[in-house]
Length: 491
Image (cartoon, rainbow, N blue to C red; front, side):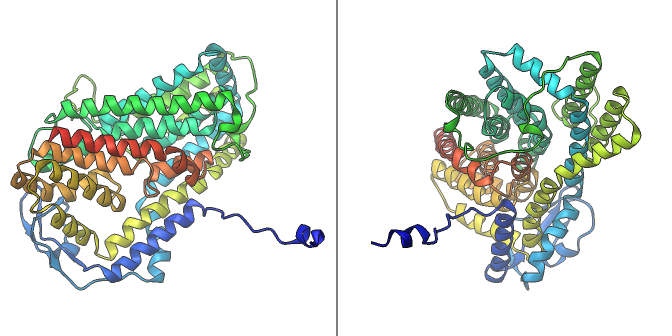
């Protein structure tokens, strides 16, 4: 045998998973193909406040400003608008326009972090935290996950979690864990909370309003679901964290090298007064962000005002915090601008991911197949007589709908006016349908590439999307089985 020939034989290249950008573009292309296949049309709608009928042919031209609620059984096929190659390429651009507020928020967060990193306060603060928790670092994991879970359950904390990666990642890495532990803390902690929303006004509240029941109906079941699934998520992350800390080769990211701000060795500097004040502004900005987006008024809390802030105000908050940090550290104006722009530059890729993900909805809307998918969902659940089977089918129908409509509030707006009356015919309480809807939406948004906060967080931390999916899939499967079992028993 010619050993020289063997030695010089070309090696087969191992399959390399495409980046999240390519995956999202592929999904956009698939959706565009569906606009050529699926029957296109719309439902008749009624306006949410004045209860005026808007026929299917008039929906596209409606400009009244009220939310539109679909009328069950009124789907009408209309002349379609198939999406072509140009529409596929244009979708991310339109998506960027639609997601401009989120993209700008990501860039401002990057600038804020760039200024913070330059001060050295975060390094000194991380060193102080690691020293304090030395020997009991795992205590941080359940505490943080419970906090994220409560945020997700109470007000749907999802997009807001993007800002917390930069806060938690250095601390968890310095404690001897890999980046996947941070992903588990943030994405599973908040994801389980959103899945089992108790009083989340953007999911439970909107859905309850359209279903004609109180937001508190069904809360006991949702609390039970939250406790069971959050405990399982904490156990899953802590087990992996302990394994990685004991043997770094067990990490699913062991073969990857990270060269960014989060991969540096923590410099043990003196945590002096100026650095403490800097970190007070750092944590204060995040704390105020949480307060500013919580719909306290909808939760019955009137002792403090509800600000109703969203991404424009949050971007202003972190820009202001960056300026304050620069003043505290006597940073020259030119240096401040340089550090801010360098930090924003690091997150341009994250902002683009958000825009491309939003392009999926653009193609569906322009191709007029959103209502077609809803019509299919209506047909799936109609006529099902067993309450347990009805709830289970509803759950899986909403999983599919959630992939195409990742916004929990948007999904509630279009699906609940249809599913509520169908639940009555099946003898199922409407609160169970709401729990099924939000559980399905929360489940798929824990790993789907259409979930903007997920792909943005992974891009920020440079964790390959496929590695996260591979790591999290056992927990995802468990959550699916557990959710269906809880709903079936409750029905």
